[in-house]
Amino acid sequence: MLNIPGRIAGQTCEGPTRRELLRIGSLGLAGLHLPGFFLSQKAAQAAAVAEKFAGAKGFGNAKNVIMIFLQGGPSHIDIWDPKPNAPSNIRGEFKPIKTKIPGTWIGEHMPMMADTMDKVTLIRSMSYTPNGLFNHTAAIYQMLTGYPPDKVSPSGQLEPPNAADFPTAGSHIAKMKPMKEAMLPFVELPRPLQESGIIGKGGAAGFLGKAYDPYRMYQDPAQKVTLEDLSLRKEIPPERLKDRFELLKGINGSMPELEKALNASAVDEYYGKAYDLVLSGKARDAMDLTKESAKMRERYGMHTFGQSTLMARRLIEAGTKFVQVNWPSVANGDPEKTAWDTHAANFGPLKNLHCPKLDRSLSALLQDMDDRGLLKETLVVAVGEFGRSPRMGVSTSGNSNSPDGRDHWPYCYSAVVAGAGIGRGVQYGESDATASSPKEKPVHPNDLLATIYYALGIDPEMEIRNHLNQPRELVKGKVVTDLFA
Image (cartoon, rainbow, N blue to C red; front, top):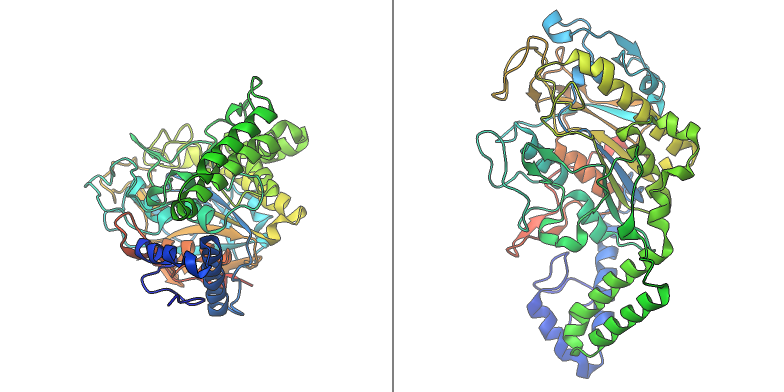
């Protein structure tokens, strides 16, 4: 018999197994149609999740997410967690300044954020113990997928992205929270995640399939942006495009019933959304920053990072579920230019480049989102893959460091979270006297990722199937419910 509305034997949260589908396909004589079956299964799964988290604080508060990924490893002790009473080779050159969180001080080169901290929770106890995750690519992969990579060389480098990778968070969200309108579900900008020659690791849909990859807007939003792939070609009028789509639907309609239900309907939906997306122009409009006033653009900062965060706000307004803004640099690039990876020089780049850009752009995003009412239902997360070593001039990852340089440090670092019911004007967790390890309330990267899923109404413990059809948890992390007010 068919087990509806409960879970079918052999079914995961990803849906029924192939064997079960073949069995169900034989029920046509009984009058059960496959589309109805799938709808029943989705409804049953949604009901089970709703029952599990009924009344849970913060569950389902968010409709969308902006992930500000500060790749390279920002120095938490110089930006978010200053230690003015520590020895000079730890506290560094910067002085602390007061924020709108009572008793919480941050680095002196973040004055705009100091005045915006009443809108966020500052987590000072991000932490994990590295196991082959001391270098950028492996740590990024863990932060964004919730799983450590399978193969890590002694240098921390990984193999290039492949179809067996665990999906990045935005891809899972694009699949589990499908769009109801013609808009891009997941956008990554303005450049891929990268360390040396490894490009895009931890930033793709992996075993979910390329249909759930992000739309990669790899252009500089501070310059003129071309969006030809989201535009209708002049030689193809809308009527002709519609005819092509109807022809495709007709071909799919001639397929056997079971194959049609499993394949053609998905193809119809995929191409239908692409068709609507091109004709609607919503994505093009969202990425057209010329529609913003000069004053607003300048408020965010007329540079790549600033205009990327402004574009993120516009995409959220237009309906995108997940926007990931990657700090626009190679993870181990030149710190004198744009990279957070401050082995060779820490204080000069932070003072003259990194902090001013981050301070202006992040504060503008938070204030702008709040003014527009978007922060009520948008979760904003700003975090890197790790922090920097409290002691200067030492090697913790095998890299060489200048006397004023800081090495990689995953044992303790900071994150900023805001929106979707997250506490406002709150410090969560505390580091020890040298910002070396959490003094209380440690938060693993997987915990933060689990909290993102939870805020979107997704059960982070749900079972998924990898490329080998093996059951896995969505993420092995514990939701930090205390972050929610």
